Picture 1 (cartoon, rainbow, N blue to C red):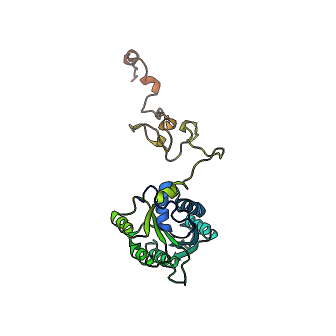
Picture 2 (cartoon, rainbow, N blue to C red):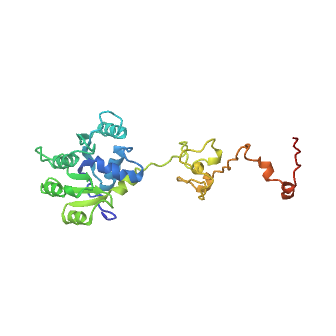
Picture 3 (cartoon, rainbow, N blue to C red):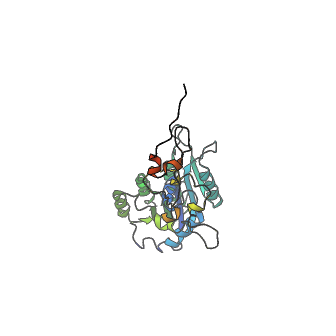
Length: 277
């Protein structure tokens, strides 16, 4: 997918127009624990290090956050970071019923034509870098490659998100190529730093005053599975010991000590009572 050295040093001294499909990028970034928590400058640095060019035009397409602010706070923060980094945001309203993305694909196609100079006397970049894995953008990609001012076009997508048919169609274009998105996102994945105070292994459950809700300590004694829970750490650190509940003595139930008495003592005859008329 994309080749081992595809795109390396091919755009030295050229301007790159970066078009982001944020909905697709959020789904692809979830595999690297990124989602909406990533820095646009790190993505540009990884792209420039791969191709050798410099990002000169920045367009990000996404749906608008919810007006009530209850859903999508991470998306709103990402939009703020993109705006601070110089991106032009093309936001479309979400669908009224399903609350899913609206005309984001249309905005992405228009952004591709804008980079190629369809709406201006000259293109704003020499190279198009499209971060999207949808095959519906193939007609727009072929249209922008007809302009001689556009030197190169890159489709940046995940290895498992591009069909073979779409891959062959891009390879058939003379000035288009695929770049693996995993190689760029892998450099942006969060890593714990020394001295940062981040805990890599959870504390044993025995040291907690009360086990967390996801712990299997709430299982009853009838459960045959071991009372352990592993979440990114060895399961031996999460063994939880619980004792069976003892029943309190009642008039109908003899005390626990009587059930533990020797059999001979329990079988001894009791003294008979004498009733008076």
